[in-house]
Length: 494
Ligand code: ADP
Ligand code: MG
Ligand code: MG
Image 1: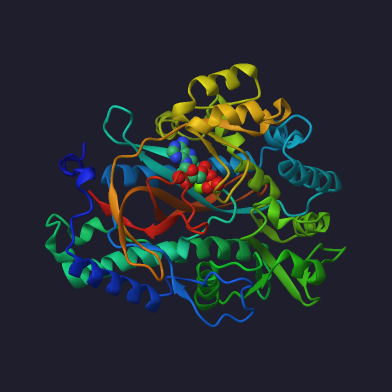
Image 2 (image 1 turned 90 degrees about the horizontal axis):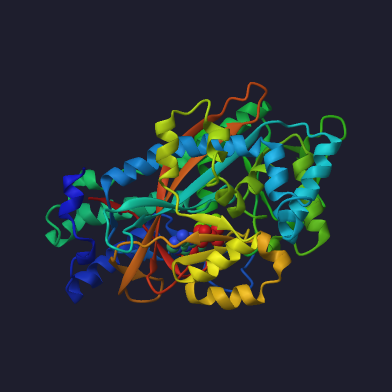
């Protein structure tokens, strides 16, 4: 397979630049970024209510090499993942068992428990909107294995809420295409050709998903609500979706924080229409907040979430779909027969096998045997709780002491996952206000997709819509761009 990738040596990437070349490329890159909305708000607290300056997003000067066949595989898997997570989100019994507060993770994890309990009482009352929208991102690393086996594609996690960087990743791909078009990267890697830079139209794709939900809701003049965090610095990534909705679909967006919604949102008793400030009806609620406990500092923040959930508006995601994205679900899927239960009757066995081959080994810590195995294998493991947004995992040598301190009752909230071992690779990374630095890196690929589902016929409307690469310094375990450990990047297919 893939003779081109066997010629490529990852450890020799990136090509060596002279100081002058690196200075030039950095200037071209940052100027392009500033000219094309590849932006962040500066790190000041508090954020001024009306922003008056921006900085370029952290970025990589070169794209990261990626085997063409594994990129195709990742894109191909996305439709199956879209369908899989749609089915999980509509399997109430499964979610109760795995994530619920009576039997599942919600019993020991307060955040999961709060969300599940609120969802359960809304279910008992009767929910009125069967449709759900997911804007997903499935994340992968290349896996070289401990003995430098042929590279394979391994899934890190599947995100069902607030999957970010769709619009900025599109712009980062365009940035690298521009650098190549304008400088040919000084012919330092002569094999490079235009076809090695894959297209990335994530903005249009994600917005198509939001627009599909809006149309399904069926009230033309309704608006889409973006639920956002106060002080968010990644606003341009969100605003670019808003502009596309208005320009291409004539759909208006309202941005509100949970605090604003507590004052402004109402659900009428007859039709359960969600309205903001009494007049504007909402077709679709798109959450770019609400994925972390810090978004719910008081009980009334949960009440606001449940008010939205109770409404007829289509939620992206529903609480069910948010719970489906739990790391515990990812682990339970690896148990015998579970994947078949969701996909067995409709997806060919070869496709199911391909999906399963993208997983690392995972197990729960619910039972003593799992804890024991995690201690034994600590050096090649990561432990994960039911959290999103980076910075929550426990790695390798920190695991035994962590397990010593973890109250046995809380073990159920954690999973053990084998570490993916990516190939050695370098990069030139640039942060606003600093010179580019050459460091050893790890590049994580994300594939975006959307799914609209939950209607009576059980069909899933879905699509794979683009990709993202985030690159982090190798010495950092975690890779969140927003948390400052990593940069936006793109792909060079090899
Ligand atoms: P979050 O939802 O907080 O983003 P992730 O599961 O993506 O949680 O973990 C955060 C980061 O930790 C990933 O971006 C990746 O850099 C690293 N990581 C997670 N799982 C693995 C793994 N199995 N092998 C290697 N690195 C991992
Ligand atoms: Mg995540
Ligand atoms: Mg992640």
